[in-house]
Amino acid sequence: MDIIVNVFVTLLTFLYSVLNQDMVLAIIVFTIITRLLLYPLTAQSLRSSRAMQQLQPELKALQEKYKNDREKLAQEQMALYRQYGINPLGGCLPLLIQMPIFFALYGAIQFALAASPTHLLDLSGRLLVPGLDGVIPLNATWLGMNLAQPPNISASPIGFVLIGLIVVTTWLQMKLSMPPQPKPAPGEQPSAAQATSQSMTTVMPLMYVFFGLSFSIGVSIYIIATNVAMIAQGFITGQAKVSYLTGKADPNPTPVVEARVSKASAKTPTRSLNRPASSENGKSKTTSKSPTNRSK
Image (tube, rainbow, N blue to C red):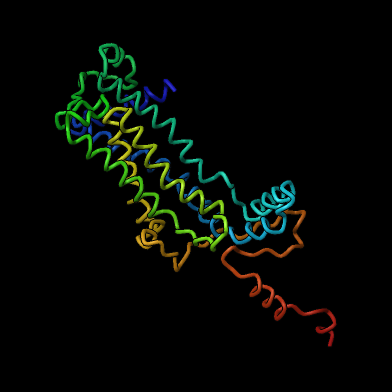
């Protein structure tokens, strides 16, 4: 973790030196660089989440079929995931990877902005590029607040603004990127995807509010910039849709991967999650000919 902190300290100091010694702008540019590097993982995560959502009818059918046999249900679910090449934990991967980045960035901000005299003395030894120590000490003041300290809401109203922006941008980012789930029928328990969608849009904003209140203002700016960057990235790639805010299903869902055929089940016909099985069966009936018919 220490080497990651040193890399981040060096990068933040370099960006600070070339961006007119503006630490807020350096954090925003750092965020953009981070999002670009993490984009392949983010795209795979969204693709896995959409595939899981489209797979819900088949998962529900399995739950009904094996409701009295949990072991068999788990085996059939894993077989279904393998058939479509879906990792049920794939949606959590970017979050797991971002957490070390988040805590390393917090440490980098503390050292770069010299939150304590010890950090200032230690800063030069953490810079991996010679010559950057010429800009030390870095200016840690922004709008009358210390970027290396947590927001003091009682002392400055800007603290309220930052926490509010964290909540709004986190909620928007999640709602815009998550297709709405169909509501369960009366008396029916919500599916795993429905429960996850509901809990994530509540838990994530609250978790980031806790981070914003507990960590430095620089980290709050990073959270806000990350959410805005992910929203922009979603619109550019077509993965974010305004219709999701109103609870409307996507009329043109993004196609997911075709079912994979393993050697053991090579003789079993496979289909896409977006293609009805009945149409494929009908097509196979009309296009296939038996040897007897050809001989005639």
